[in-house]
Image: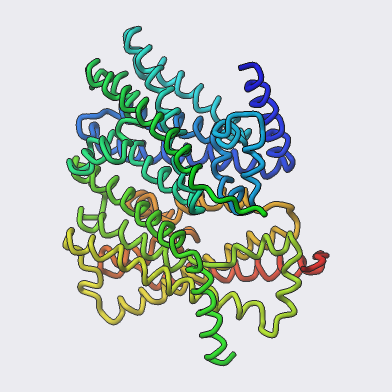
Length: 261
Length: 262
């Protein structure tokens, strides 16, 4: 464990130094991320200036969905940014080198680049999230808070599992980058509660494309929109999904043909 | 430049874009998902009693659909590559090609726009069919002229904005963060989030509005906006400002340029 933590720290320190090689670029990128967040908030204000409720949800309800989405998205990007560079590793053959390291190959490839620029935006989002809950929203019961925390961590893990699945597919065809973007675009549907969409789409987002479970899941338990039985099913689903992703990676590795000579 | 050259450059662009067929198809699927996401968001809002000022529900849905297709035409450009070429020094190789650099980029861009527009028609058709949307309904000759002019104006305005940003590469060492920030600004102020005139008429006269909002509005509402001549005049004014800014930046940048080429 200590060994892995040291690797995480070394990777992070290297990423940090690389990320801030050009402070102006770093500043512009961080500003862009914060601006995107602000623009979406303005969009919410614009909508709720005209209506009081959307499908029975108040402004604060919807803002809570959005904040959870932003946190899950940002934290998983911070941890799994290395996945975006995976295609180039496969194409230039450097992936083979990672198999020679005395470290778990999923760990070294998925957490190869801990994005320091994301790490700077996360405290901002988290502070706003806590401020919002404390001043404008409500704290749930302790049991629901614990269930939310577990569900939130599982959402991040499940998002990383999707990154891993994309990498597994990327072992045979260099499509990881595109697949990650497909997930990121699809997950945007979770900025709002997925049951506001047409019923067919809503079903789809709770089954085949599990945005409803992964992104909305923690919110549903916080707002008590699902019972304990459903929460348990969601948890089982996410754990199974993570295990399937890990197993798919090892299956895909069996078919991997090195590009290096 | 002869037609054969235009054709050859366009054709080689197409071959280059589709060299990795699966990647190409998946990237198009990603765009389609983008369209679905924004369309579903507005469909859900409209279904739950949210209405935009000056737009019927059909027009709002149409606006976002057309805005996507217009984006495929206007925003398709290779000019973003110039910045990296300047930083790496590779642009000096382009100066030696037996074809003028701007002609090369123009032919690439035309090919890019044609390919993306053709593909976006396939995305568009199922939506038109299921939601009974009818673009070009009640279009008169004047509306067609305004539409074509707004498309040309939008493409040129966007190209010059992109060129201005890329000219910054003479003074910067990295471009990706500038592009990222600009795209976030553009998505908001060009009307990709919402029709600008439903929020503020002032926003509709910003230069970014010409990149997406005006042509999309025209298709969605099938009527000329009031003061259409003024709108075009302001658009051409912005275009002139961008053109002059770009030429000034480019000339001073070239004097400073010291790339070593390939």
